[in-house]
Image (cartoon, rainbow, N blue to C red; front, side, top):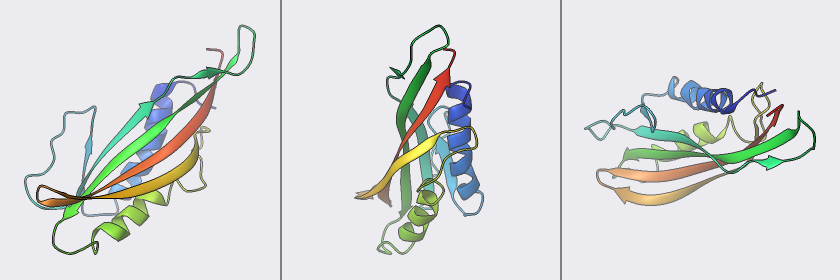
Length: 137
């Protein structure tokens, strides 16, 4: 069971980090101040954004359902079509499709949009909808 937002965020970003560890890409996280690379090497920016929670039961130790999105911007070099982007997108989507974290973050819809050229990179945006329960909040 998820104890708090920090645990949920850590579990979700750990899935992104596990994919990054198998690739030759740089990961930038919105809460660390890390800057994107200066080259045209592939890189991603990942962030977790929570929505408003919903109370699901009454009492002092009630259950609250928390939802939100994982937003991953994927940047690959321009000029090769989607040759680099497609396999990277597929590997980033895989841990979220039909899965949950050990703490109970459930991933709902996963979708990626091809945005197009962004500076020297081709950009894709991946959005993963998630939900988890908190108790005693």
